[in-house]
Image 1 (cartoon, rainbow, N blue to C red):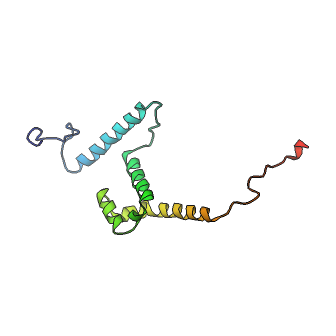
Image 2 (cartoon, helix red, strand yellow):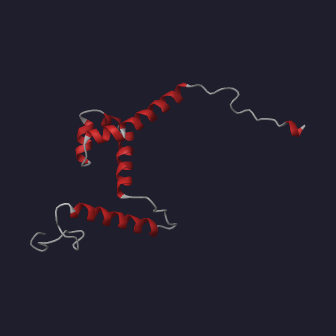
Image 3 (tube, rainbow, N blue to C red):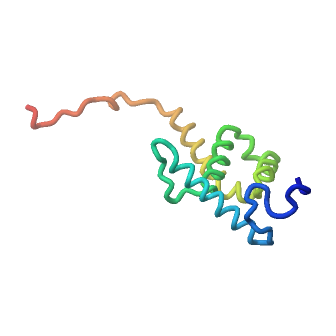
Length: 127
């Protein structure tokens, strides 16, 4: 591949490979492609404010919700490295939310439903 394309990036060949410029240009291109893809859906998905990082954070969170062991070391470190981030970022941004949801689900499962929860209310005007 290097012989066939010695300059530029393989995916976005028009992008110059300069330090610092490459990362911001790639992110801008990915966000533009994501916007185009969302607008091309039938029916269109609102693309206002959606960025590639939204998808990345959603993927992190959904994966951690399914595999709880990734919320504890050494799984968290390996998961973070695989996602090109740090375990501190995962711990700060995703772990507290997931722990709160797990606590709420566990608590709801323990609470028994009340006998009056499905009673129909009667209006005084109906009499």
